[in-house]
Figure 1 (cartoon, rainbow, N blue to C red):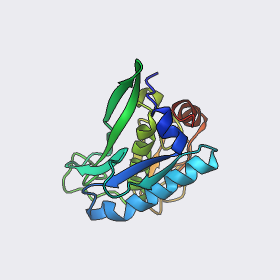
Figure 2 (figure 1 turned 135 degrees about the horizontal axis):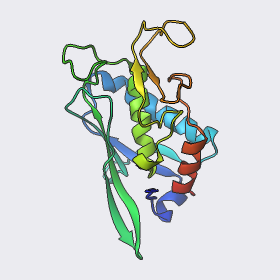
Figure 3 (figure 1 turned 180 degrees about the vertical axis):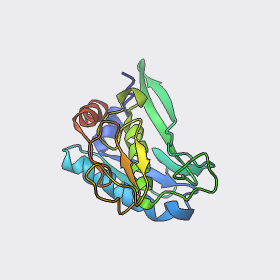
Figure 4 (figure 1 turned 90 degrees about the vertical axis):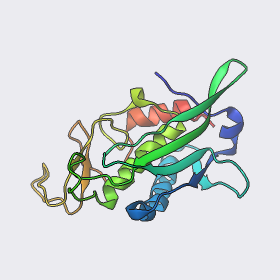
Amino acid sequence: MTIISWHKNVQRKGTLTYSVKAMGGQWAGVVDKAIAEFNRLMSHHGLKLTLSPVEKGMGPHIVLETQPGNGLHGSAPSETKVINGVRYLDQVTVRVPATPRIDPDDRRSREVGPGVRLCLLVHELIHAVGLDNDEHSPDDVFAGKSVVIPKGQYLQSRKQAAEDLVQPPDGSPPLPPIRIGAKTLTNLKKAWTG
């Protein structure tokens, strides 16, 4: 396990602050929804954690930005600091591809819809709490090897997808709606004990 937590002084406040840097294009309408959905999930599952905008003049815990690319995966590289011999998160930069496409290898492929973007961003926000790739789950928004189901494709239920969806690897219902499962919740509670 590679969970690295935020220091207790941060956790006691019950919030991680964020700033948005260069999240334009089709991401602009998704950022606020992703923050709201993340906060709803944390509250629903009893975690005393919210994301809130950083106050002017202060440094954020999380920086949200896009990076060039057509892929369907983001990243959340972190900076850490050691206090009394223990490594803690100090800042996380959540990066998502600027133009995620249905087929990442085809630059002419259309960009994914807002539901897939929402899943990408919420997934990376979970990483920002302190979970690494080792904690990926098989059945929720924090799955590591999900695939995109394009709008119009038939689902296992024999219905056509009304929007682009994300299919977790275990075959559980596609996302959105966003959900976190038992494994992700257990690991979040290990990372955020606040």
